[in-house]
Image 1 (spheres, helix red, strand yellow):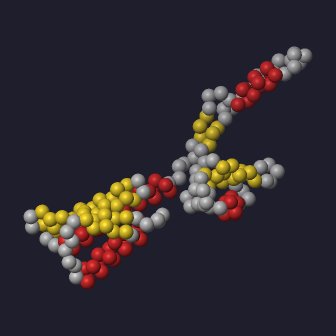
Image 2 (cartoon, one colour):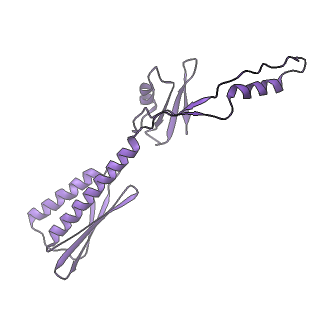
Image 3 (tube, helix red, strand yellow):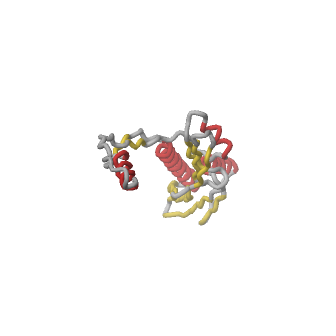
Length: 197
């Protein structure tokens, strides 16, 4: 993690520097998934209090922690702890929203498909066939929303083929190289089509 200090910095002892480095290392381990993050530490004084503020960007969120104490080290440690709590809260929110699977829901459409197909067939039928089409009472088509089967990690095509298994007809996954959504669809003849979205 790249740390930038702004303001007048007091001289810290060796043990305080070690503790501060360990706190930033914990924060770095928590936040750095895709590249190195940059933290900005703003130091200042107000009368007898030493103030420290730690700012850093984590995906679309700006994490800000402020601390105030009689010495600069304690204020900086308080600020780092507050940022660490915010990061844990943000990550847990992200995990909860990304990993929940919606329940399957059945929906019915307004017009049944069989009736629509019968009207299309009747309009395209030759004129010499003068028999009227039978009016059958068709059931409405049910649309079923499928839940997620794959975990959210990116895959290659080979890994997706293994994950699709024999009993699944399709698999939606993120490509490891391009990070785009791809769909594998099993055809009736046993072949597999790849659709890139």
